[in-house]
Image (tube, rainbow, N blue to C red):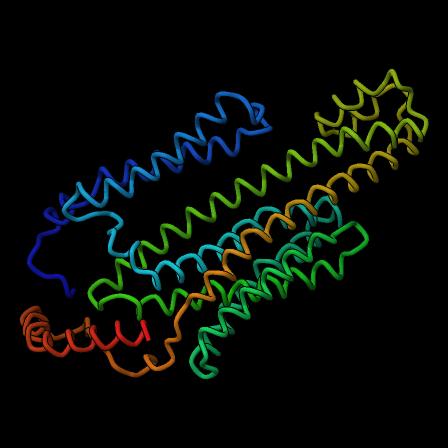
Length: 370
């Protein structure tokens, strides 16, 4: 409502379709490489290496394309050069990477280690996503009243990293502790997500607020997709490795003939009770040993996944240290009002307020840099 003078068709034609295509191509190739690695193809295979390397360089090429080619770029380079904006974006991405990844990995952990009851699984699985949503709400309520936004972000990033990494201690015997850690860890992740989203408008000119939020959202979603692919890849590869190591020893000790091992692994891949029952020498004792070995293997795999979150979390901690304080900008001023009586009033208001807005932009920029 503030950007007047163009028809809808003119706005559509002005879209950076080249940037959209390059962005999608680079991200899809990069994610394919990560997902294929260790699953469909070995990590050292040409398919995996080519996808990861090509996707990475396409994303790098996007930056140069956006800098020199389109008149109305998808991701303006001026935003990428804005240090405060980028630090908040990094923090938001890290919070999103924890949220999206746990949204996929945690329910699988609950189903494998804690319970087979579907209702119970649902209640336990909501601890991660529910903790995150509760953190979002609490952050919204505490953001301005508590103040000291920079320190809120630093403390939240540190606590998020510590509590989520502590989930590496998860086993089939640690249900209560793991649920508590998942709630607290994702609660802090909610702060790490919301604080940057609320703060980013103070790092850009008023007319670029929507653009900045959109760019941040796109980068955050991409980071979440990459984190999910990384965590799932680590989980599947590590689980496969540990299962191949732990299951044979456990079932052989329980009395399964060594000649039945190939049939056992085929039955495990089939995933049905009938397939397991058809394995020669399979009995209740072997079944109990198999279940325990599978849980131990999954515990080892999930331990690696949560330890891997430390590297991402520390990126968020480091980025939060470079964030400037914005407490003095938390005022009741409204730089642009969307709803006027008619288009003429909107145009007149924008023209009349132009000098005042420019002054506020300079003041906001100076305040963030202070």
